[in-house]
Length: 111
Image 1 (cartoon, rainbow, N blue to C red):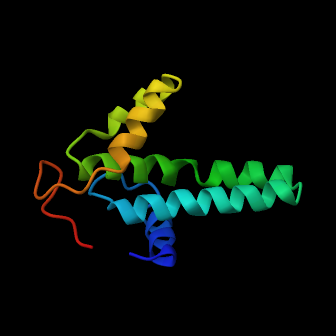
Image 2: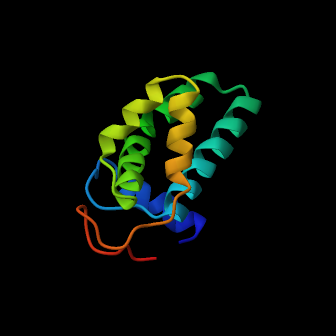
């Protein structure tokens, strides 16, 4: 999956918490959030940055849940991110894990 496809998929599945997200889909989405956030920050567009963050909140949670599904974990595990540092490190570790084959959330993911 390339950058454009990943961003389109995440906006298409705006609140789609079912299914799976591959590593490439998840990390392209994260890169998109970082790049747009940095650009808006450099342009000192605070209100636009806040609106962008609000508009991408649900897709970010959804793709995070789908990414966890891809490695066989419940999307609720995202709540571990509320634990500073340790929770974030655990989520990053899980996000870089390779996709599982068939699991409780669906068959093998399509690349």
